[in-house]
Amino acid sequence: MGHVVVKYKVTIDQPDEGAPDYDGIAGHIDGFEEVQAVEIKPLAFGMMFIEVQAVLGEGEGIVDGFEDKVRGVDPLVGQIEALEMGRL
Image 1 (cartoon, rainbow, N blue to C red):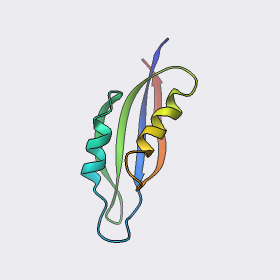
Image 2 (cartoon, rainbow, N blue to C red):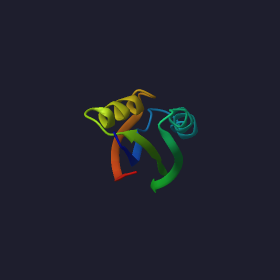
Image 3 (cartoon, one colour):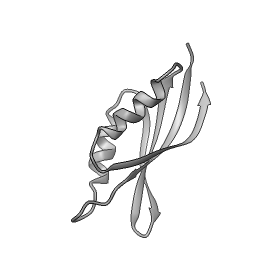
C-alpha cells in the first residue's frame, strides 16, 4: 500500500468573544503522527487559517478519518479543504 501527501486548509470559526487560539489548535494538530508540517497563514481581514501537510496511507476511509480527527481537536475547527494531493 502506498502513501499520499495531502495539504489542507483548516479554517477556524470565530468565537463569541475574543480571538481563536490558532497556536493552540495548530500545536494540537502538529502532535498527530501523520502531520509533517503546520503553518498559520493569513486569510483576510485579520482572520487566519492553518495549513496542514500530512502523509496518509492509501485506502478507503483513511483521508476521511484524518479529517474527522482534525475536526475533533476543537469545536471552533470549521471547514477542512484539501488544497493539494499527491502520491509518494
